[in-house]
Length: 83
Image (cartoon, rainbow, N blue to C red; front, top):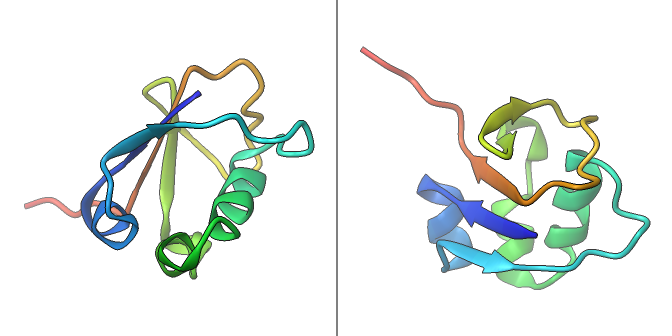
């Protein structure tokens, strides 16, 4: 699956996107964030407070408990504000 990173999540990880194959035990957005946080210091820093990170699965907003099975693309970004 392709993972996209936006705003300060991207800045902390140091890349805009990557293709990953998480283990079968990673079933939800929450699981994926935890697994990514274990991939290195930069990921741990980006996902240190997963409650503030938003996700989208195949371009549709998703909650942390959303299943990622069959997803082609998952994006992570901070909360947005508008004006």
